Image (cartoon, rainbow, N blue to C red; front, side, top):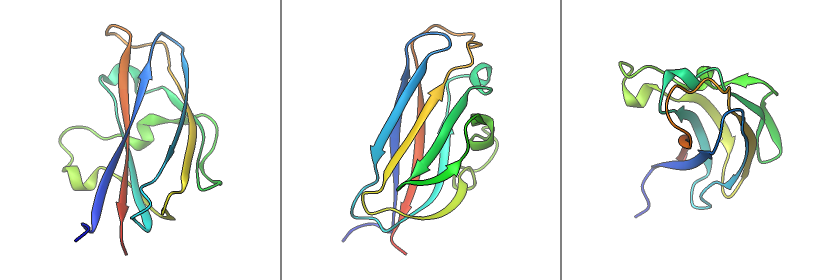
Length: 122
């Protein structure tokens, strides 16, 4: 039987400082709702990076310039409480955005950020 919750990761490979990375992915067709979103980054030094008009299924969820720090938490927050709460149709809905690197990463490029979608059958 299909599980009630799926955490769908979308890897964002950032090649260089100030890079803009187009992100497009479809939610798993077997899950009816996207109930949360979270972004994991390798360092707090990139937390001021932004997303451009994040949309799901053609509906704008976040406007241009939305800072990823609004979709991220510190490690002391329990995993099941890290997600920005949503209640949007999934079932193959297309996620579209651009990840705009701040150029402030103190590590070595390239790096990978991961956008997680929490999908559920509700």
